[in-house]
Image (cartoon, rainbow, N blue to C red):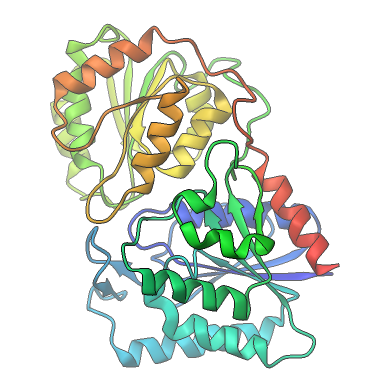
Length: 380
């Protein structure tokens, strides 16, 4: 049986981990033994299918700037922590001896993890035969104004990576539009389509979420402002008589649940994020959310109407860029995070409420299957 090791690090939200989990489930279903090495804070009830999870010493970002990483005790990581983490990853690699290594985002992101990933890649370079090495990246990279960093990415790719799996549709966005030097490594770039699990049914049947307005902020540590503003926007919308359901991510302040429940009028449900979120999304009247890769692609998969507020703090640009691309095709309505008010959000909800639902096939959503096939073929 072939064996694949996936390395993934989530720092603020859990989108990276969810994509890695979807890939792990697809590989496991194809009969491949999968080990997921996760470097972020533990996420309960993570569905990996038949894959095995190995928790590395966890780290998270102190804030949206991603400049300071904190360990499991909320202390800034130091050289001793880095050495412990590096040794754990290298020991896992020696135990697993995979046929392929998949690294999520690196070298195009997660530069702070060079302390462990470069030694791992050097170890592979010294092997014969060598496992195949893949980088798994989103369709859009965060804009980086430093040319020396981009040149560094190219050197690392040429020296260590067999293939860059770009989880996007080149008809919508090509990698070189956010990373111009991608034109120099086109021989290693493979577009997989968007990595999302498409439900078998699109909004059929009754159940939680039926004809509701679903307000979600993913599983990260941001989104409190959107939840509060959505609650205030409800009475200003044409959908004020529908049930609204606010879903809170696990990393939001623990006191927020009680505060929102106390402020919520009749017809508003406030609860933690749910494992049946995609099914609820398929049944809802309208979705209000941030514009993370996973939530946007789930909206595309189920065909529901959506209003999105892209996360745009610090150097974050990819959510805004992707959301505006989809909006230009009439697939979502976008409201900028800066200056967000209940009135502005309500206006967007009122526009979206009368928009036609999304037609299936607008973009390629077959990324899970295609990624698995590309990896299997490379191993063969």
